[in-house]
Amino acid sequence: MSFSITEKCVGCHACLIVCPNKAVYRDPDVTRQFRIHSRRCDECANHFDDPQCASICPIEEAIIDAAQLPLNPLGSLQPQGIRSE
Image 1 (cartoon, rainbow, N blue to C red):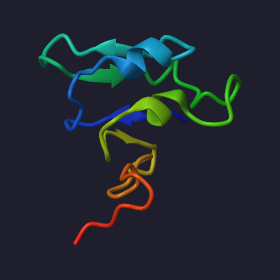
Image 2 (image 1 turned 120 degrees about the horizontal axis):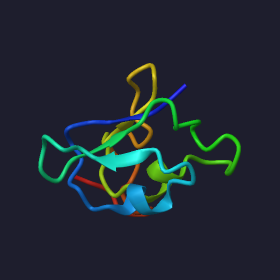
Image 3 (image 1 turned 135 degrees about the vertical axis):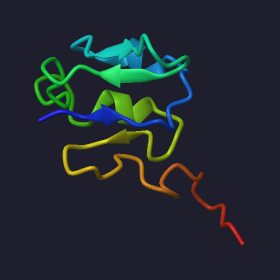
Image 4 (image 1 turned 45 degrees about the vertical axis):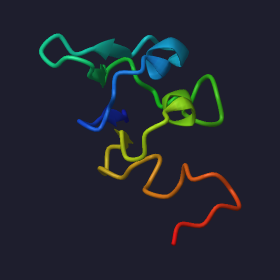
C-alpha cells in the first residue's frame, strides 16, 4: 500500500515536510515535482488517522492511492459555503 504524486504537483514542498516516514522526495528528472517512495509510504497508518500528504496538499488530484483514486478529488478543497456557478 502506497500513495503516488501525479503530474499535477506544483512543488510546494508541503508533503515533503509533513511525511512521518520521509517517503516523499524530489523527482531528480522533473523540476518542481515530488514523488512518494513506495516502500517507505505506509499511508500514515502507524502515525495518523489521515494521510498527512493529502491533508496538507493544496492541489486537487495531486495525490492518488493504489487504485488511482485521488485523495483530494475535484471540488474537495473548495471552501465550505462557496458555490461555483
